[in-house]
Length: 270
Ligand SMILES: Nc1ncnc2c1ncn2[C@@H]1O[C@H](COP(=O)(O)OP(=O)(O)OP(=O)(O)O)[C@@H](O)[C@H]1O
Ligand SMILES: [Mg+2]
Image (cartoon, rainbow, N blue to C red; front, side, top):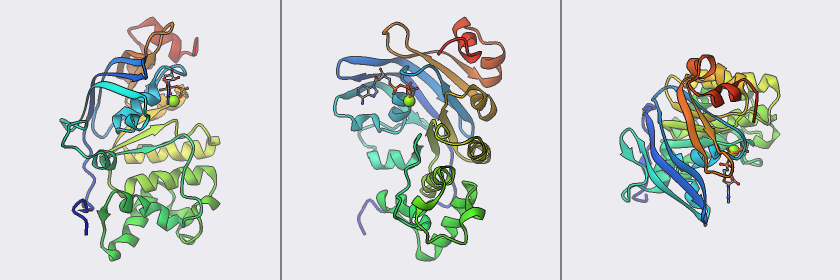
């Protein structure tokens, strides 16, 4: 057993995520300027704003994926439950285990079985689960992802044989298997039909009680439906992206402080 091996925690322990004065660059191109945002535990925070304003970059900074880009750099702090995830003592793999990510395009391992897809993250993150606990974990995660009833009788079939919406829920189940405290979602429904989108939104609602969720979406109805907190990003005239305004979703949509927020959420630009 390697010394990085950890035993799966018994329960999920959602924590608040906080970004403080986060700036980001690709080479010498600054794309985010001093973004600060509190993403409260067990709530859904939606990131909205026009294309290119840095939402995905910000999301990748929240689980240390930004540093995978060779030219990328950043400044500022990201704290999970008060601890800086960029602290020199924190291993990247541990940060990503606590802060999972679901992408725009569902990316299950297509030839791998549904069952093996769900537990794939355990090996990658060096997390140990007793053999007898695996079946229970697979059922639990597929249930939470809203997929169990559709696949329980074909767990050995390849993940690639599922529909797009089912594949996305399989990716959510895979993320949940390592018991993250935070789940980041970058436009998770943009490649899906309305029915699958609804299904994922229901899943988000159910998960929100136990995992802190941050979701990027271009769909304002979706932001209004799924989130309790909302942050509006904007990159004006070649300037780096920044947060114009953030707060409770009701207020952001009903009575925002900034006229640019009102214009954006009402579809007048972007
Ligand atoms: N790998 C990269 N290398 C260089 N520049 C990048 C890279 N990824 C993003 N950028 C630049 O960073 C800025 C922010 O991009 P980002 O993808 O974060 O925006 P976004 O808000 O997610 O947009 P969209 O809504 O279209 O997904 C853009 O100017 C983009 O061109
Ligand atoms: Mg993006």
